[in-house]
Image (cartoon, rainbow, N blue to C red; front, top):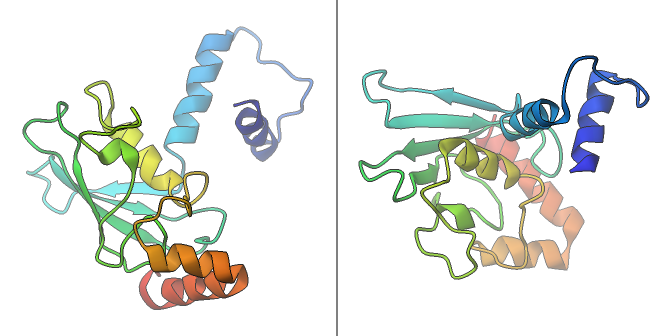
Length: 175
């Protein structure tokens, strides 16, 4: 977490020796957490403003393999929310180890039942879902437990060719 806080300070141009007068650590941590969870890389839209349980999320990664792409996700919040996770589908064709070309997503917090304890829980929020989807393009990119096995194996075989294929998909489908 210190690394993330340091990154934010560098991005804002705040010097390492400066402190915020009158702010306490707890409120500072919360603001850093909130800014990290919902970055400028995410934008929510409502196709039908009368249906707040159905919305779209656009993610434009600011680093990594997927830099330069704009990826659309459809999110449906069921009536049983928050006891069950929202239904999420990627609408943009993508070459990704954790997203199938058909739009299914492998993200543990979207699993209703998870043996590793990181699945959905009633304490999770839609902000957690947005953070998780955004993180699939950076720190949660997982080649060891893939949904798209071909993409994961491609990365293991030839990282540069994998990067090129990702960029081809971005150019053709994610602009």
